[in-house]
Length: 256
Ligand code: SAH
Image 1: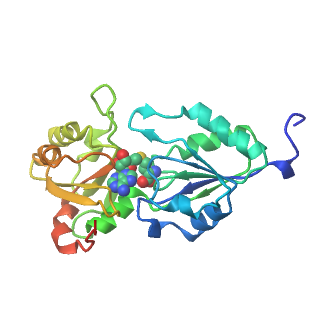
Image 2: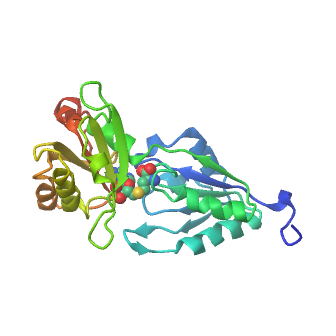
Image 3: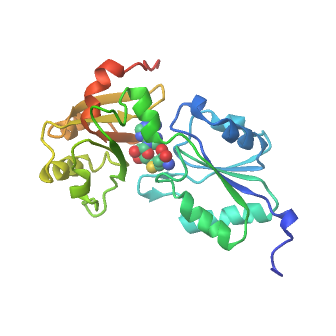
């Protein structure tokens, strides 16, 4: 304890989810904390306009990553949060979606705990919930799916290390985050593990924003269609018969 300043001089780090893209999906708690923060440390995928809620004199620090090209290594980022808090600042660590869904929120908090920095976590609307709502694809439905799985579709050395037999199940909706690059492999694995080629699947790009695009197909054709439509990250893949409801339930008409 001798080297750390007294606790009254230490600022709190708020790990805040900013939702999937539409700024209206920010929680009131997130908006209030952003408005009060001395420093806002933010990612690549945060909702447009969110930074405008910060004080004009707040420090705004970009630490975003694009795909595998990491702008700021996680260890440096952890150190930065600790330094800001030790300087007595109230810090908002702003993340896309929800901090605890593929957001590395857990890793950053471990570093704060080690350094005895007080922290709080503010949930956000995760991309799966946001994209499902704005695309008109319910994630569960009594006639279609009694369970939903969130999986990472991130490719490592050309493969995706997932429990495919557990995912290729009937009456399950699967949502793949970070999966556009590996979409061919994802569809192949699901078919190889027992789902029919005609099993419905969709991709939602830039969900909840003015640039939202939704594409529906089946496991046999999705990868081809996504390539033809030049769909790139950020995009979610939703697999399951709930996708059949999309034409009826779609309501959001993005105005470019
Ligand atoms: N913590 C975030 C996810 C971070 S991982 C959350 O809870 O939403 C980043 C991945 O999220 C992207 O590769 C993409 O698959 C998905 N994603 C984030 N925002 C998105 C959006 N507006 N539309 C579609 N996918 C999105």
